[in-house]
Amino acid sequence: MQLQTFEAYLEAYELSTKNPEQFWHSIAEGFIWQQPWNKVLNWNFKDPTIQWFCNARLNITENCIDRHLPQKANTTAFIFEENESSNNHLHISYQQLHDEVCRLANVLKQLGVTKGNRVCIYMPMIPQAVYAMLACARIGAVHSVVFGGFSAQALVDRINDSQCKVVLTSDGAFRGNKKIPMKATVDEALQHCPSVTHTLVYNRTGDNVAKQEGRDFDWETETQKQPASCAPVYIDSEDPLFILYTSGSTGKPKGVVHSSGGYMVYTCYSFLNVFQYQANQVYWCTADVGWITGHSYITYGPLLAGATSVIFEGIPTYPNAGRFWEVIDKHQVNIFYTAPTAIRALEAAGLDFVKPYSLASLKVLGSVGEPINEEAWHWYDTNIGKNRCPIVDTWWQTETGGILISPLAGLTKTKPGFATLPLPGIQPVLVNDKGEEIEGNNVEGNLCIRFPWPSMIRTTFGDHERCRHNYFATYTNLYFTGDGCKRDEEGYYRITGRVDDVMNISGHRIGTAEVESAIDEHEDVVECAVVGYPHDIKGQGIYAYCIVPHTTKTEAELRQEILNSVTQLIGAIAKPDKIQFVKGLPKTRSGKIMRRILRKIAEGELSNLGDTSTLLDPTVIEEIVTGKL
Image (cartoon, rainbow, N blue to C red; front, top):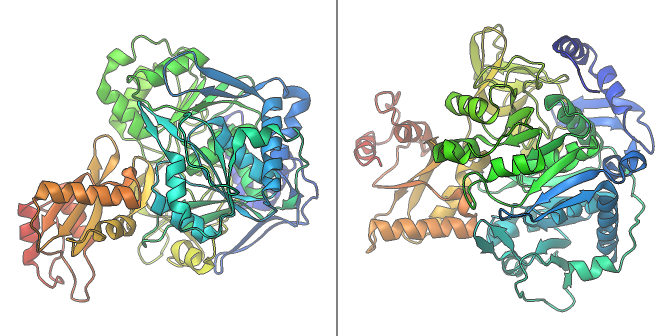
């Protein structure tokens, strides 16, 4: 399953494109299936219909945990590094992981959760968040993890959309030197979530929280009552494993649905090959389980490969900007996978925070969430990798389930700023706006994929038409990624950013419409438009243009109230970095806001605003340019 040379990659890639079904059949045979498939693949991109390993039955946790126990019962599955810099860490063996997951699965069954029920997980970055995901999968329930930084209203939207039956949460969370009251947020949300019958609350911060009799149960008390065994529930390969909500170009978050069998096969295959993980290495992905990176490359991929991983509760700059480097030395981390946002922030903090640490254990560096800029790539390479660690600049999405384009560590020649080459089984194609393929090298276009891969999105929960419209309707018989892309003279791919109305903020996709909707809730805002612009740390920042014709408040007061509104309705991650008050917005005669123009103004490209002749009132542009922040 693991490729050893670049020549082996080329051979595997050729086979995977000439005979994809034979290729994935051979990979899938390396897993435990309760019932084998009778057909590898059934698909079309019109409906769309994507079915991998048809009519096979499995349980992913059997492959993540049980099959490793004969050889790895006492091997560390996770090292939990707590929030503060101290000796507070915990080693969790594969046997302990098995026992905790089974106990929690039994609690879920006692709370009435059965196969196909949805369970919301709203938790900090602690091992119990991973136990929760696996416990759901153990009994065939579908988990929906919601990032712990989201607001009560964002939680309401996601719970109600998927009709979750149970919420798993904690009393609170540690975030640097702050405590975040998670149970209070859940309580606020559940006033508007009639589908939820119970919550299970883990005691993390020790704060007193309200408990509603008959609804709220204590995690530790309930799990301690349960046996450490729970037979896995076998489900169809195409039964959903999880729903993960991502922002779209409309104001309503969309629930991306991933299947069980195909996701299992691809996440393990991509983990082993991209990172070139070797037995007994320590791997650390710094993501949160609330995002797809945490699903695929903290929980499922590493466990399927029998790896040892770090779960990190803290943040990169607390108690100081040497925190990452301290943890790497402390646990002798071999593979380190983080976001360009974090790299840029630590670069800005200076080398005094790096120098005290050896970092000699590192073998592979990775980057995820957005394209890494060349300056940050070189800083990462020189100061963290000491010019001896390959950097895997990975490109993928919530919808793809796993890494699609990336160097294979130590096998693929890297190039700063380039995701380089597709993994076996991935067939990228560049097209122009008419959907015509752009062939050859030294070209640029919209990035699409022409053939299905096992871990790709199956639908958007409760709205299959939205899935078709967003990903398969733009170009005939192609999956449209929403990203622009260049292919250079070597055939290497470089992602140039979103071409739709989605921003990439610190590696997290946030829809412009979702932020605009939150800003519009402010009573003084008549209309607004939001765009992304280059940000030194985040990669992209959020620039908001707001029309506020009648108000007695100062601009400072208005800005703070708007920020508060966005935080309350979405979360702090979606707060605009700049808010400019304007008298009008550039619109076509049909009323469409020309975000292309607003984006160029925000980016400072004032001499290249393009054709403005179709605007209803071109004079608004002068006023916006004059008032640019």
